[in-house]
Amino acid sequence: MPLPGGPPSVDRMTDTQVAHGPGTPRAARVAVVTGASRGLGRALARALAEDGYRLVVDARNGDALRAAMAGLPAGAVVSALAGDITDPAHRGDLSRAADALGGPDLLINNAGTLGPSPLPAIADFPLDQLRTAFEVNVLAPIALTQLLLPALRERGGAVLSITSDAAVEAYAGWGGYGAAKAALEQACNVLAAEEVAVRVWRVDPGDLRTQMHQDAFPGEDITDRPLPESVTPAFRRLISERMPSGRYRAADLMPAGDLAATDLAADGRAADGRAADGRAGEAHGAESVLGGPGRS
Image (cartoon, rainbow, N blue to C red; front, top):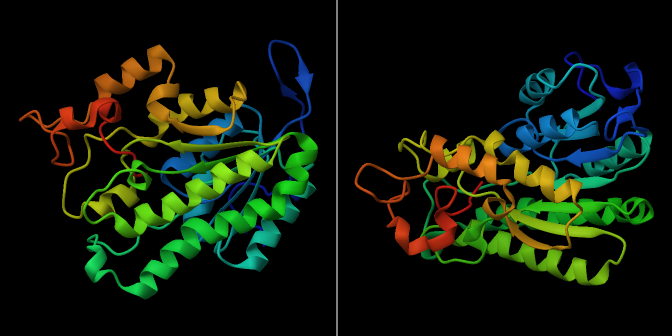
């Protein structure tokens, strides 16, 4: 169900034309963004609304989602639905909301779970929580993608899944989250090979100042990590230029001016020259451009 109060839901809003270039009207596109109440999901929802997208957004916490959507630009068209992405009924609600707006052009699989905090070793990882990590980070986004694929094919749309370098590198404690993201990545990789009309992207945003990242490093000061808003230019470029399907790092997609500003704001280095997460920065090479490994 749409959230009561807060920003108007789509059935109470007036549709408007959206500019696509100076003086060129076009029908608004529709984006579905999961996990939009905070962090990168909220930042991406705002960026898309500024770019004229109609939005279908979700989060488990209705109050937090309502507050996040209240910060969207005036006139934004948004259908905000509180629910759990692992619930088939909720995924059906998201699909129907996107159809009501004209059909999805873009799906951003952002919702996810870190798992236990502090992060346990594989030897000690509770199997029930490992199952939950795979349910949230792999099965739910695949199921939602399956549900939206017919409409995405028809509209030549795109699927963008948020990943992490923990999916491709071995970091102690990151086995559960990393294994789930690796599974999601391979599913996306195969989907890209199977789908001709749909772009399938997976993006590592880099270390960001989010609650999930704080949970990964409980008690540590992560204020040197860039804010999620700092990497939205990379996502905007990927989407607007409709780049080929594949795996991307936000650092590699950032326009030069935006990347320089991000580096100045937070380069992920502590005073002793080590990376912010305690590993030697030079060991990461290019991965340290945005402050180290990309666990959003």
